[in-house]
Image 1 (cartoon, rainbow, N blue to C red):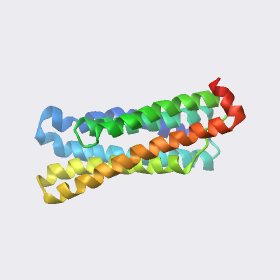
Image 2: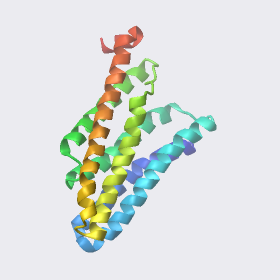
Image 3: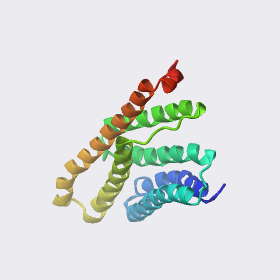
Image 4: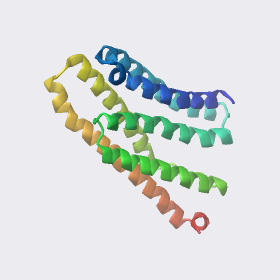
Length: 198
């Protein structure tokens, strides 16, 4: 359990804390909403920061482990699906975009397990990187939107921002699907990988 893996585990711990913090205002009344907004923003920032740092530290310090290879993508999925289930639950994120992302994330975890069982890493691609950026961006914008809605009330600026936020969620969902299709195409084209599906 080296430092990168400890950072990864911290994301698994922060995800339930994020869920609890997010719902403080809904469970205990509006007086808790400011605290909820601050806590969720802090937890979002720490989650994304540890996601950035664990991989960099592991590569630079030669601390890459089999445990980290499995746990890191699982922690990513665990934490980001937590963001999205919260945001879709309060109507900020379109439900269909959440469903697409959820299906993609569970499917790619299954594909990763198949490929790692044969010693084949899942290759990175531009769609996967775009998806990661859009996941983080849409999560941040959704959390900020809720915070500003509470702090500013019915402000005209928020009404103009809402369609933009919806577009970001749609782009995140589409990039997630495209990245998954890219992985599937790589499996189909690679004969050694295609044997995994038989």
